[in-house]
Amino acid sequence: MPFSKLLAFGCAVAVAAALTVSAMAQPVVRMGWAPKPTILPPYDGPHQPVTNYDKVMAAHKGEMRWSHDVVKTTRFHGEWVQMASGDSTPMMFYGDDRTFWVVWDGQVRFTIDGETPFVASKGFLVQVPFRVPFKLDVVGNRPARFFRVTHTNRLPLYTADQPKPAALDDKNRTEYIKVTYPSPPDTYKLPNRPYRDFFKDVVAADPTHGPKDHSVAQDDDLYINIIRGQGFPTPPATNKGHFHVGSDEFWFILEGKVEYLIEGIGLVTSEAGDVVFVPPGRWHRAAWADGQMDTRLSFNNRPGMLHSFAEDANGRQ
Image 1 (cartoon, rainbow, N blue to C red):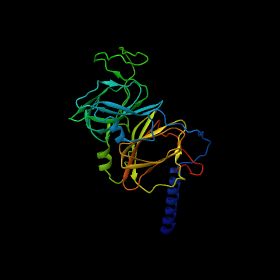
Image 2 (cartoon, rainbow, N blue to C red):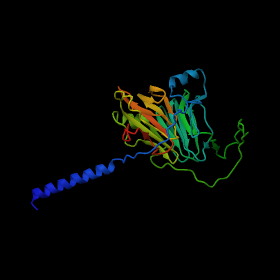
Image 3 (cartoon, rainbow, N blue to C red):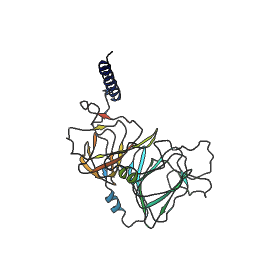
Image 4 (cartoon, one colour):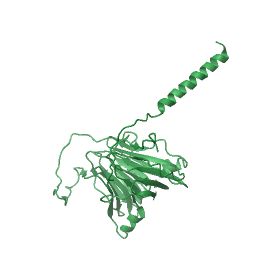
């Protein structure tokens, strides 16, 4: 075969192969019947469409130590916590659940079993796997403030080298007893790592793009993800976004502003430090607000949680 024809044949094969790979990379959009409540699940308990950071701070003005519930579902408990300068926690762990923090003010030294202690400041995303002992110490002359996410109604355990913890003032009159357990602690398997310094490792590393390693925490019961991009004009209201069957979703705004269109609420704007919550079954759409780089940290109940889009949306928003 002449070289020119061989070259043309090779190009054709390469194009066909590229098209095949491209087609394979595209997700297959399927259609089904999803249960959608006609009476919208309410914003009950502490939940609000947007929990404004400044309003939370104003509610606790003058207090040295406090906590403020933001999310409390059957699955997750998200709360703002402030510890005073010099405060420390005991060495503790959770039996079956990952613990996660967004440090937002002050400095906290994290001591995690098996890891080199580190000091976390604003923008640090910190996590500890289940059964791994850890403690927090507030360093410096200021209080430390963070958004903490645990599983709802899970109580911590404490290492046996400490005095017996006090009984809890709860309806079950819970007290602590010494136990033995054969189950080993979890480990940091990627994408999980002790911490990410968002402002250094993400923003400073690439001011105009989101990170390629956007997954922050992942196990069979939790998925936390950095979603970062340049803002753009508000999409039309005909773009309803998606909803989740039986699962809520919430976000911590790390940078800039993020617009949300929430069924029954309308269009709302959230800013850095705010937490946005959407109950299951409500249409919602998140969009980076025009004018700057925007970042939201999403909290889902598992990797690959099903997103139900409108019939005519072709599986996207």
